[in-house]
Every structure is written in C-alpha cells, then in structure tokens.
Length: 88
Image 1 (cartoon, helix red, strand yellow):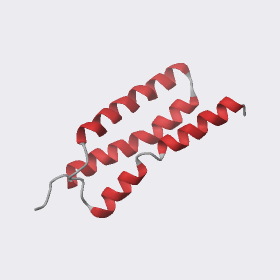
Image 2 (image 1 turned 45 degrees about the horizontal axis):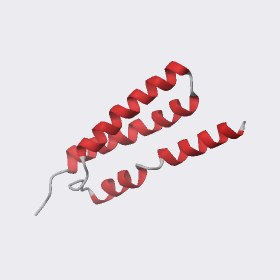
Image 3 (image 1 turned 90 degrees about the vertical axis):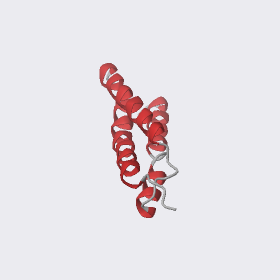
Image 4 (image 1 turned 60 degrees about the vertical axis):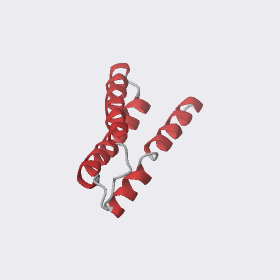
C-alpha cells in the first residue's frame, strides 16, 4: 500500500468516526432536540453523491468512506424524527 493510500484510508477512518459520537449520544439520551435535521439531510445527500462519484471513478477510499457514513447520517435522521421534539 502506498503512502497516499495509507493517508486516504486514515482520513476515511477519521471521517467515518465524525458522526459516531452524535449517534451514540442521541441514542443513549433519547433526545435529538438540539440536533439539526437539515444538516444531516444535507450530509446524507452529500454522502450519496460522493458514493456515486467514487463508484464512477472506481475509488475505493471514497466508496468505503461514504458507504459507512450513509448509515450514520440515515440513523441520525431517523433518531431526529423519533426523538427530535423538545420536552419542557
């Protein structure tokens, strides 16, 4: 594996973990009142586009990264819809 490959896969691993803390926190607290639904919808659409681009150019770093990010964005959208209301 070349240096650029190692860098690409390392960056991909860090990218995949960017949403994980928010997904875990929202799941545990059963609250998504302060989470932006629009942000995760945009992220989901962005990751979908990147995934198709990665497939188009046959770039496995892009394909793997966005294949792993899509479920997390989708989970946050689902959690926001389920737990998004503020309780006062």
